[in-house]
Amino acid sequence: MTGLTAAERVAAARHPQRPNIADYTGALFTDFFEQKGDRLCREDPAILGGVALYHGRPVTVIGTRKGRTAEESIRCNFGMPGPEGYRKALRLMKQAEKFRRPVFTFIDTSGAYPGLEAEARGQGEAIARNLMEMSRLTVPVIAVVTGEGNSGGALALAVADRVLMLENAVYAILSPEGFASILWRDAGRHEEACELMRLTAPDLLALGVADDIVPEPEGGAHLAPERTFRELDRCLSRHLAALLKESGGSLAEKRRQKFRKMGAGEEA
Image (cartoon, rainbow, N blue to C red; front, side, top):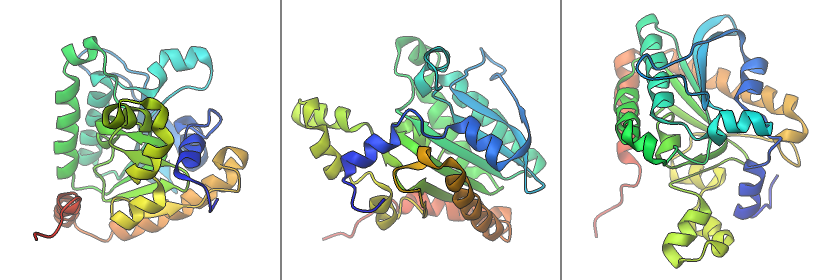
């Protein structure tokens, strides 16, 4: 879908019929076994996670879940996880480390839930701990931004060896509406913000934030999901095969260096 503006890509990323985490687990993996709860407080449906087989190899799969129907969206808090969701994700990643399973994360969220109760239960600490612990994992980690990837709520699942983006996915520090509200105090200028933020997959590939782009069918992933699944499967297989050739220590060090380089500039 070449020739789209940044604002049009944001609209495509937010399309309600776009494939979600349940679609990806069903299409790309077999024998998926969901695991629930953070073992501290409660189950957070906004994050789906479990173990599965990927082409016969045991892996851990984690993703944000927005929901498709009104009832499911409310139950999943519209894909905005609380601290329990991030702690559940971390529990699964530590389990993957113990049993030497590669980790796949799928990201589609407008951001972590900013409510008072989430902050009271340690939202900021939960996200920060995920960033720290993910940087230390010695198993391959591949993150896929499938729709929206906003703020620390997305980054908490994206400290990965490879960050892949679907062609019309977007990845940014916050929503364009929030950016416009802060910069110009006018959320109505969100289309202008989309261009300024450089949040599209081609922009982020050029900046070195994303490592690869997964092509989408004309009109968006929701119009031909099976084709999207095939393209993503090929991309995941290729990157996983390369990562499996490296030692755990090398993976962790290269991941750390990768993220430390982001945003670095030359001194005048």
